[in-house]
Amino acid sequence: MTNHNPGPQVRATALLLSRFLNWPSVVLVMFVCLAGPVRDALRRVGKVGYGQFYVELLEVARLRGAPEIAADLKGLSSEALHYFLVIGGQGGDESRYSSGISHEKLLRIFEELGKRDLIEVVRVYQPSDPDYPKDAGGGKLTSYKTTEKGRKAHSIMMDVIYKELATSK
Image (cartoon, rainbow, N blue to C red; front, side, top):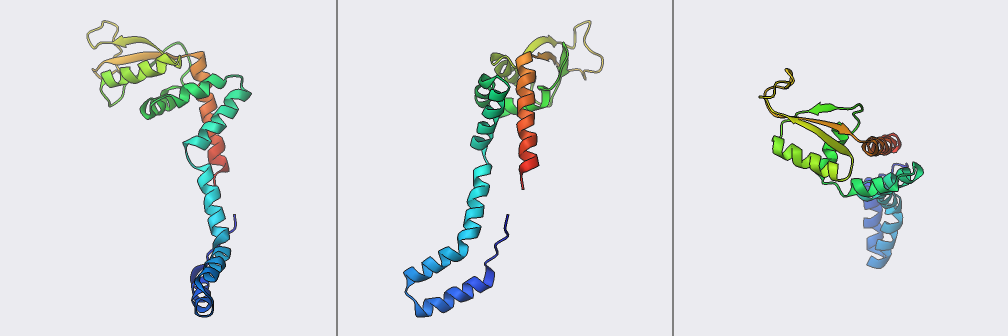
């Protein structure tokens, strides 16, 4: 990307021209002088934002034969999407998760993820359960597993995020 810094030279030129030319001519000269920085700014705006990310997510999902995953992820709340990024990469039959938010709120998020078949809640442990994990900290603990679709969705999301980070300037 070219670094355009019009700075004081352009201002001085514009001031000088304004004494000899009418205002439409000055605007035209300013537009020509600032065309590079404006064009660069517009390019950067096109790469930032959820819309472009979704387009790239859809493209990767289609390449992997799972275009429905992009629609499922698009429909998630930002909170559910955040938690899915944190927990969705877990493999295996069962993972446990405890967070600083209320257990009821966490279960609502897990329910939202479950409706899209991204995770499955296996069990909710109570502190009074005989097999309650000793390292759980005394509160309710949710045990879940990431579904096959969830692992694929997480992998697709991470690939797009890595690609964005690698190509960002």
